[in-house]
Image 1 (cartoon, rainbow, N blue to C red):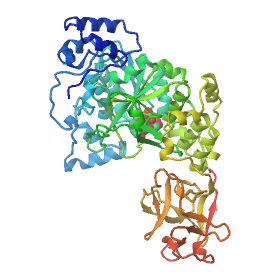
Image 2: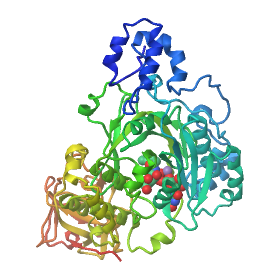
Image 3: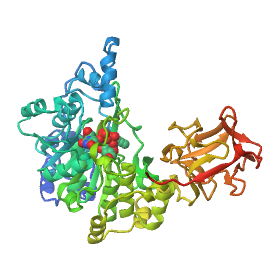
Image 4: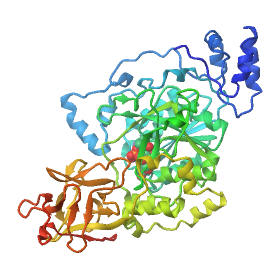
Length: 582
Ligand code: LR7
Ligand code: MN
């Protein structure tokens, strides 16, 4: 494809200039760039025909930061290939996986400077960015991360960011206790001549507060957050900064590729021509959804940034002062979870915006499981900490109608102590922020396509059998899977069942269905909130209206299935019992 360099506002101007003599063009071009106001950011080298020839000079002068003369590399994991350890290393691999949630033994054998495939759309190479992009602090917070994974993150940032933009890499240690993260790390970063800075928390703060601290201490005009197990891709930084250069209230998000936690294979996340963005469902689970066509078609080029209601949380860029003006993260959010929504709602409702940037790609290691606990911060709390975080966020930013959807999905949350949110409410007033309804209508309008507004629960709680003293339990299995019956533990979780006014019986975000094998946990049909169940409060039977049978427990095998209804059979009787946090 013979790609033109792109421009937006200056297009008309350049169509005229294209007619001008070839020799004058570079000159005119440079002058026009100088006189530009900061609002325009993607410079363009005249018409497509001319740009190919003029490119060499313009590349170095006008901020096309594409790397040149990249030498091929050979070795384990190079070019993002999977690295498979020998059989006799399997013990080390298993050990490190259980300690870190990822195969550090594998990572240790891969160069900190390895090459990874350039996963961008090909046309990304043709963008020019301003030379004077804002200086940037890349902030990496970490708690007990593996050495080679943390340092490969640092190396990739140093290797793939323009020097004059990268002010510093700020490492913030969230009270790690692993030996390798102590003086060895202090010593190692000396080789970067002050570009890499390390500060440490004197107690465990969790990633949310640690990031806010990093933001306060950073020296760059823009801050970019990365998790401590990332590899940034070719020319990742200028495209993230350009929208912020144009408008300081834009938060930008790179496209996040996957790095396999066992083999460290680097894999592009989506097909080339598809664009996704962050949304949420009412239990505040983060999801991604293909961008509605009506929005994509407003852009001229497929590699242009597009708006998104929210983001996954870990990787993004924002003007530092703007982040602090927004109060950084709500300091009442603890350790992990919900901060991505807090910042997103705050930004959108209070006048800013979020853009995802296709030309900026960063790999992230998705761990097998979370290898750390929440420390003392969690012990002070009664109830699940992440749900408490969500409650703070929705109580601050949702309108009443939407709050109900959250409580419908998470009925226990109503009784959790979220602490004081008066500071958040004051901020919302001070910044004159818009309503959540405005946000839903104008920004997150596609959320309800996937997750329609929820009918209220008729009943919720644990679902006890009338015959034996036991409860319905998903056992935490992923759908599709058979539902079991277990000792009632009273904590909710996998035993927290709800029946809504439209006959949907569910646990969390999943639905309870029935087929010839029995009663099953299933994915709810996307975009629907109804279901086949009705509960008779007199006979305590649960009728499946389609099969015209009732939920029954087998007296001997404890198997759950549908049986011809018999209101006198205690094995077909079920009692909802509301539960409260302990
Ligand atoms: O107590 C802690 N203190 C920390 O400093 C716990 C963690 N951390 C560090 C940790 O070392 C890591 O560098 O914080 C960073 C993020 O922690 P992860 O990697 O355990 O989080 P995650 O990748 O499982 O979770 C995602 O959601 C989190 C919600 O709070 C954060 O926003 C993470 O940054 C976020 N990660 C991403 O968005 C990467 C893409 C994943 C997706 C989708
Ligand atoms: Mn992570």
